[in-house]
Figure 1 (cartoon, rainbow over the protein chains, first blue to last red):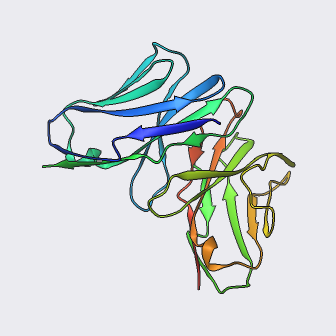
Figure 2: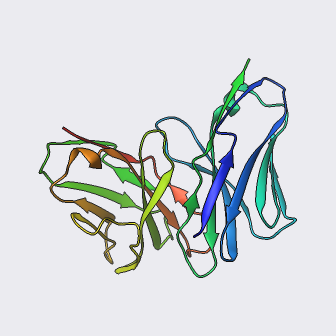
Figure 3: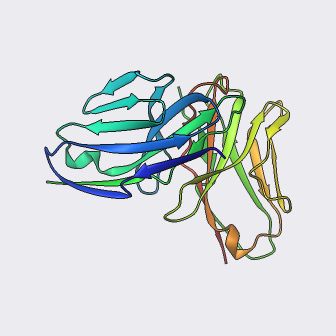
Length: 110
Length: 113
């Protein structure tokens, strides 16, 4: 069965303290891996798409990487406004649905 | 370019009533997904539709739930005879082709009293 596991469940960082979030996946052929950010009471906001192992994408303080079994979302020198839940999703070959992990709740303290 | 529009944002229904949730995809997008999110839980896939076709409804409960995406107008998620366990946030997402990222709306929060 296709599944996505994210760790840690929650993470507290001081402003400027860099860290990484993990997304491990098991799929029968990967079509794509997606990172989203979700603020309380809002819908998920798209961040990145990764399609193949070795691929990297960057946006401001965020950088996403992909291997054959997992993806990392690296946060460099985070700010309080980076506080949110970060969601990882995969789309398996031959299907169109996105399978989501339960997310990492990030809190960045000033 | 407007994003995915969902309405209503909040909906309160008494047990046994019907709930209708609407979703207008982004301009140029013909693929729509519905997801359900319970507090402190992840997003659970319900159904995937293209214009006038249900492609994958493997996550949809067999009874009381239905979805449509007509040729004209928004996609509709319909829940008949609601029960307290249907209380959740329902999110719609759209994609231009089903093979790339999907963009989400702000959700409809359904409360059954």
